[in-house]
Image (cartoon, rainbow, N blue to C red):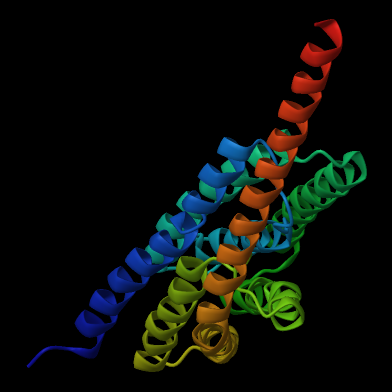
Length: 252
């Protein structure tokens, strides 16, 4: 008979896969940003929130804080590297200096907070359970912030009735990642993992529901926008040709 620990390990590996895919899901978005040379209306909040969340879980999974949690350390260390890469790209292509400064400030605050937390917990908390509880509460907060960060984007979707700036893959893998880690937490009950991933399930489901609701309308709006741009281009071209013809007539 397969043991609960073996099942938990398999689910944890699945969680690593979904979490890695979740971390990489904005690649398409950043390719678009790179091609256009602009961040447009994309928000940096989800990437800053995810970075904070990954750093907190790396600390939680360290042997001196919460032993036997190597699967948490491996995936979240990778997540830290990926999210930092995205944030650097965002800073490069953000045209608004105030926005760039805000992102840098938040990034600095996150790094300072994590260094202080690690130092104080390891030095002052004497037992694994105390360290796990303190860092675990920060992880719960980080997860809640990460999963709630798309709320601003969800508001934009409802206002504009368009999902253009809510990447589908990010929403899909937020949902799948929450399913995997929520299941993982139930196999050897861990309240620290259960709370944020239960919330992630709800928010991920809400994002997918919004996507299903406004997907067709988004296609229509984008088609109308392209048609409008084409008409404007044709009008400008006609005006230029008229001016050229008038200039030629006057010269003649």
